[in-house]
Amino acid sequence: LVGAGIGIGIVFSSLISGVSRNPSVRGQLFQYAILGFALSEATGLFCYSAS
Image (cartoon, rainbow, N blue to C red; front, side):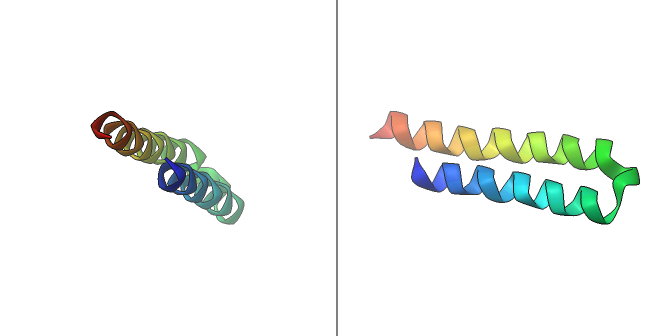
């Protein structure tokens, strides 16, 4: 579960970095960030349920 937490942190830190560089694509980057969050969280939950 620690790896999933680190992955989620990386996803949202990249979102903040991307929005600060180009604010006009905020909506598209946010959609990608939510997708990355969901995939990272799903991986963590699958590993948790398998153990």
